[in-house]
Length: 464
Ligand SMILES: [Zn+2]
Image (cartoon, rainbow, N blue to C red; front, side, top):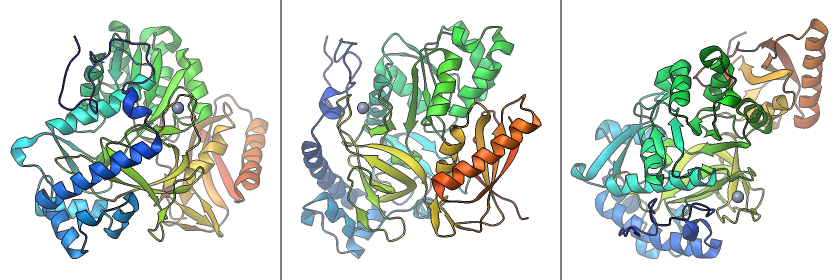
């Protein structure tokens, strides 16, 4: 029986279409020609801004202060008449009106879920969701998982941290929404508990951070007495940090788990339900939700909008198009993207992107702009001799750095003195040739930069 729901076709349900061989979760929205998507975005944007003006104290004040009238909005670019919203402002808005802040636009009795950012760099920022918000969140995640090949019948281990985290319970809800079996193990169970559960329930899909995936592969034999390739996991995917987008890391995970299906995922806690995910071609991550969030590029220094053409680079900002509880306008994510707009063989029409850095991670080495991710991709090419992890060591906070740029790189076990000297020399000369930067590499044993469930910090400050 075909389910009918007032939100269709924006939110589909697993029984809306019994054809499991179809390529897309939501064929209509994922393949809409760009000009028709832009028209849909503009129509939704007008409704959303009018809604915020009526219900959100923060945005009502902002619109008034900038003389902005929703009725005057003619193009998506006209939105640039409004100021940015920043993380610092969200924190302040939440201190003044806890827990959700002055931008809250739905009444408390309509909000059914709260999540929060990790708060590693200050007070955590909360996100609230109405029931419709949670449905669109599930829809957005289902689009990504479907593209990875996840189907009803799959048993999906959620290996992200579950407590309060956006990839925790909301991800579990989305797995159920898609019609697959949600196995909410969570990073809290640690590697041993997760491996045992994967074997017990015959899991077919695993999602979590790349460092956790690598750790599971390493511990599998010890915990279960079998290599990870015998676990039966068909899809390994996730995000939260750099890893799954790097070809060298993908290859390592493919070999370890014995599958071709290793995929990357990206979002920003405040941006939900916006989702970027690989399709099976892994040629950049598609924006799968242009109908839920308008993504625009800006120059991080000047704040000016940049055209989103093939190869364009810039910080991405987003504006929610139908968020009820905590909609944001022109929110600065700090993520620097490189965009691809050429057609993808999968037929999805949303632009594709790679995150090339954070606006606050950008380094300036004698006039050369450099993101740690660029160093990481050079290091990745030296796999398996370089074990994959690296760290930039600065004597004081950037962006200005005096060369040589100090870099710690993990090396594989079992390399002799001559091998190590050769590896250091090749790394330094390749970095100089490819990135025009003089680097001084210090090789450290595999695992020295941390390899468990935690993220490796790409930049550390250590006074000399
Ligand atoms: Zn594609």
